[in-house]
Image (cartoon, rainbow, N blue to C red; front, side, top):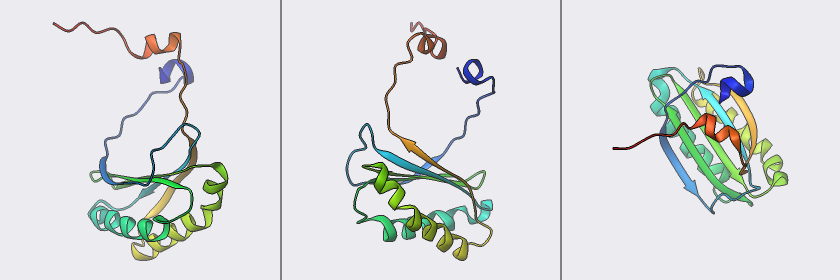
Length: 141
């Protein structure tokens, strides 16, 4: 499907779930920030632990917070975090706190670097004919 829509080769990464702090279920229309961090492989466990400590300290009682999800790819030294909020203004209002989190992490683990920061919205879409291309029919015996 990715190749047909965008002309690119899709990639697959495998992550372990490190933290699932759910304050309220994520619903349609909620907004999130995905942050991707790279850290040397030997520092991944310590970085994940520090991330959990700081993200909960900074966001646990943040007004409008829905969920904090942290993933780790221990083999490649990657942490990804999605923080979901109940509105776009709350997401945008969290930017300075997110910057503070990144600054604290880099100060604690200097080789860590932020490589991606994107905004997301929870949506459901109908793929119509595209879903047939993406998922071929399987026969189970």
